[in-house]
Amino acid sequence: MSDLKWKCPHCHSDATPGDTVCRGCGAAIKSGTPIFVYFFILAIGIYFGSIALAILPAQLEPLAWIAGIASSLGALQLSSRIFKRRVKFTRYYRDYHA
Ligand SMILES: [Zn+2]
Image: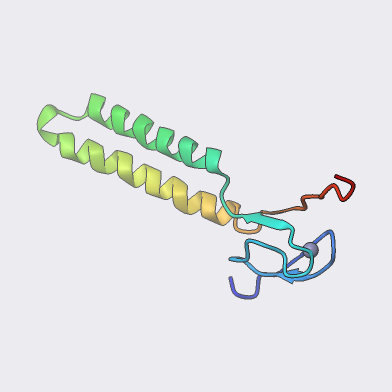
């Protein structure tokens, strides 16, 4: 992960994961899992949890909760791997004539 480097498309400065602002031009750097994916992950957990809840007998209810949480954590792991290299540089232009 430490060998991962990005190049700012605006000023060609190097940026590393964890940087939130470009050192060269001040562009905002957004990396990693997008917010909406976390909602999706939560939905996966609820989905599998409710399936487990439906098929398991009542006395095994805690197992259904574990199944739901485990599937959420699995999806979280997977998404962090998928979005590891995702990065977006956003430069905000100021209006100097204002
Ligand atoms: Zn830059």
